[in-house]
Length: 217
Length: 133
Image (cartoon, rainbow over all chains, first blue to last red; front, side):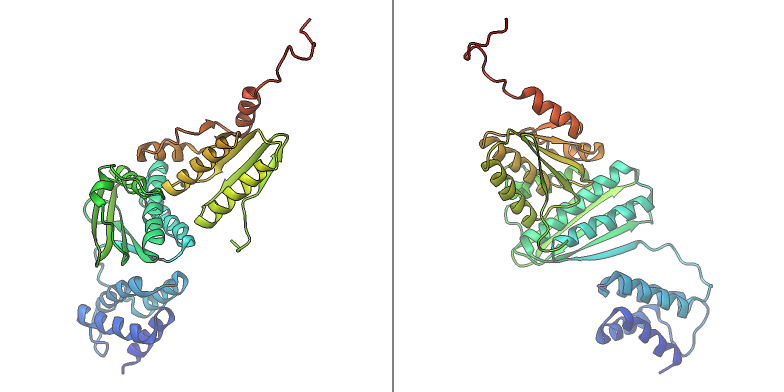
């Protein structure tokens, strides 16, 4: 084991369990084609970019995640090889009502950073609130990813995933022929009205994935 | 938020005032409905103001909860008014297609209380021999 390898694994364990840290590291090496025994210019940044993807997916605690990324940046930054600005992605696991507030706060902050107007910030936060509440009420648990779209048309993308029972009457809901007793029909139609793009995939065995986008212009 | 947190209900003369802040969950909504209905049941209440100035994001669940509380109050003979909705929140609700049409609205708490005082049924006149003379 190289000295660097030991340090990188140590940094990953700040935010990830041992087994996940090892997998993220191995995948990072194979995707970035970096050999920690022979580091060339730009290798550090490439490896860092791959590791960061894994951390963003698996780290549950935002504070630990950020600490982990900071430490890895110290270890791997070599100042060389500028790379294209990657789409920035935040992942929030949604298990209880307080996660709804966390998710929409993160979405709102990202909107502000991207330069969305106040009124669009509120719309995006409301859409996230709807999607997160659907997860809590109907599936019990799931996750939401919030992505800053930085390449091509700039904007924000929100994807809600759950492995719940699926939404059997999606067409009725979206055609406004159905209203649940808890207001879900209005929530999904409302979300569609607020966003520029709205896409659903749902089924009894696959759960539900809803992806929405709002563009900056 | 602790387990025992509940939304405070203020009684001012014959009105109840509730200020909703931040986010409502299932449990808080149920608790609030119970608290409001039992306060109304105790008597002496003619109006209810639900102040929303502390809400920066209002989704369909919260708007439905507020509408329900207004309707329940009305069924118990109490007039309900919502107040203080943020402009961005109002625009978002309209764009979503949720107008909260069934509940009266006022610009702020003061206007809501004025509205309730103005619309209050006046005591019947001409029955006690006390003419306008």
